[in-house]
Length: 289
Image 1: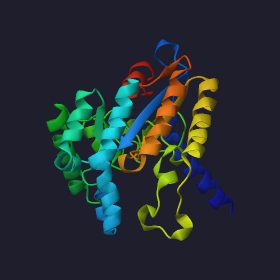
Image 2 (image 1 turned 90 degrees about the vertical axis):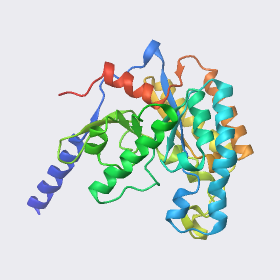
Image 3 (image 1 turned 90 degrees about the horizontal axis):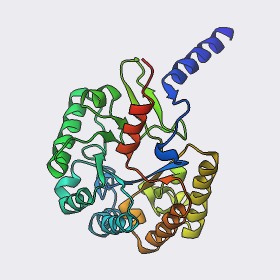
Image 4 (image 1 turned 30 degrees about the vertical axis):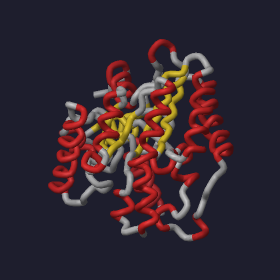
């Protein structure tokens, strides 16, 4: 039993050593909090992979035809530069929306080729490089961030600065792979600040017990409280994860408009892209070693 506990403790330490917090993290110009507004522009790709019924596919299509444009209008009206995590295939399906996002100064980042990471390493690399080429054709340069389960070593090899997938902390931190060979900055989000968790009827083919259509005022209160807690603590960080097919609905756009307006009313709130956060951390708080 003692050996089992010792092995468990060693495994916990090894896992903990892979997640390195940034000591004394501060933001430019004395900002109290950095808020990343991000959008996972999946459209219907995940629905297709899961072989979901036509109505679910149509819901995803709404995100590409309507929702993404509403979100871009919202971001632009507030002068907020967002990060749009985009599968490579979206460049084929909705290139006009991505060109408009790029022209408005929003970051276009990797979100896999077709919303999955192949288990075969060579195929994974093929997907990663194909997405890079597709996004480069829109923006003129390779993406530097990813929201995916892509192998850290491959992301590092391809020149990525950050990932935004792991959720082990509420502040940015450095994440190292299991073999200790690749370290990348992680910008954490949390499913409690993810619109799909609140507004998704029949989410991923779930049964009746998992249905949830939450009132927008309730989501507003939850997200405002999450923001305010870190704002008062100082040196805070919030990564808001949106989906065009979810938050692109009119009443949810109105809620986000109210949320952004209230956030902006407080002094010391920074609304960067994820790339801006990553470059700040890497420049001023680089990983040890």
